Length: 183
Image (cartoon, rainbow, N blue to C red; front, side, top):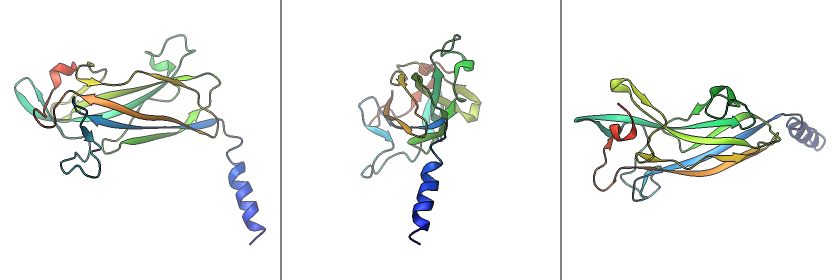
């Protein structure tokens, strides 16, 4: 057993040495306009949302529910077409599940130069087949992009993003989707 343990340890550590990919992690919290947490709500929030799917909204005079997802784009800033172009994305845009407040992309190509990491909020109302991206910042405020390098075999942690939704948990909880640029 004493000889087996070092061999297993060496095999496990050696597997990451030749990797040309790294991992990217981020976490997020959705808050209302007063900074009160919406999701995740925390251990002591009795009325906390369990996800960001099925949140209350309006479109015109119609009440409906909407889903809010966090997306991550990783762009090669050296790409001639610019970060607005899909062809400059290092990996396909990733939308995280609405019941998650932390995400991981395990296979991102390593880089010598920083990539641009952009977190976006994406909104959909399945009942009326509505999907919107690039929401108005008065609807949901999202921090600006961050530039970071991805190192082979390591985790690039983008830390915690706070996204502020223009609702009031203690008052008007329904988000007017037309104010977001939807509809």
